[in-house]
Length: 231
Image 1 (spheres, rainbow, N blue to C red):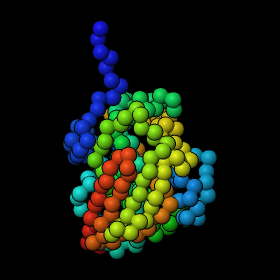
Image 2 (spheres, helix red, strand yellow):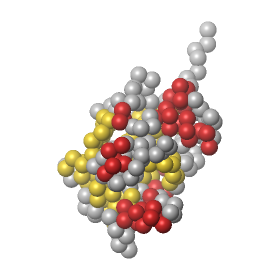
Image 3 (cartoon, one colour):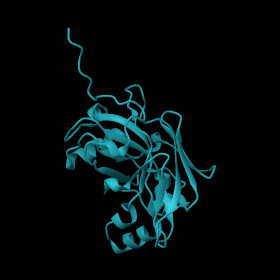
Image 4 (spheres, helix red, strand yellow):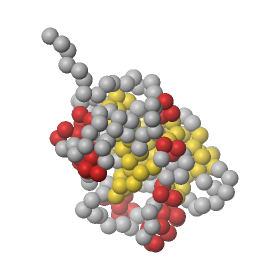
């Protein structure tokens, strides 16, 4: 009797850095997915989360320098659970969404906060404040296990050993399976696509010389040192 083929081919932890993808993945990012973070920025909850996309040049593997823009105001850290898609699909129902996940990790959605506020007030897209180079640091991808509860993952972020963010994915307004369902209504999800799933409260500025550490007991510990680019 033939052994059934797994839904997603597993990968070994740390065996593949982002630059080794066969093609450039899309980086789907979710805004306003934690109620406390919505409140801390003075925003209001919506019936749907906000979706935007970052280019591949935003990715920075754990252990490497992250270069942030100088002279453009504060750059804020936003800690996020990151999902990698391992199986192609469109119009994926939430109950089947985990079949399309190959790996998970932690990442940062770095944001030029003052610029973002100006863009929001003008009704303009957020890309200039969200999609600059190095704005999506990413930890080593860990194979997704079916026994892992995606709605109960603890995650923390510290800057220079000071705890800044602490949350649990159970606080998401739109859980991972619902996010995959929503995204797949408009995009055919492809292997290698990444989903940054939103941030808990506690966001704040980072500057050159800072050490940022993202950690989860279920996933691992990842760190990045901050540098700046020329204005």
